[in-house]
Length: 71
Image 1 (tube, rainbow, N blue to C red):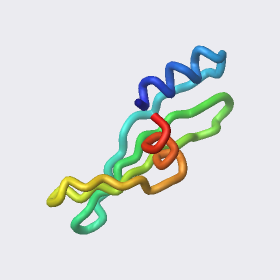
Image 2: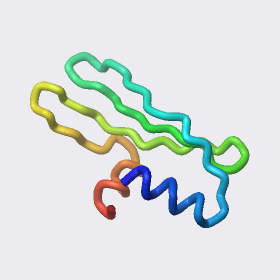
Image 3: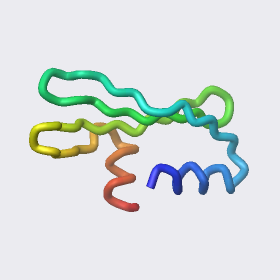
């Protein structure tokens, strides 16, 4: 879904620089973030909290929620 969103954004003429994935340890869970830069320095982040033990993934910010509910 992320690839589709980035491809759609690029097809509309918006320059997008993909910054990639970041993972931060939050105790028993991880914060997983995908970053990209649109236009002139505008960062967009898609963030999820991942519980490795239960394999539960939940959206952590509005971009991730929108992606999970609409894509």
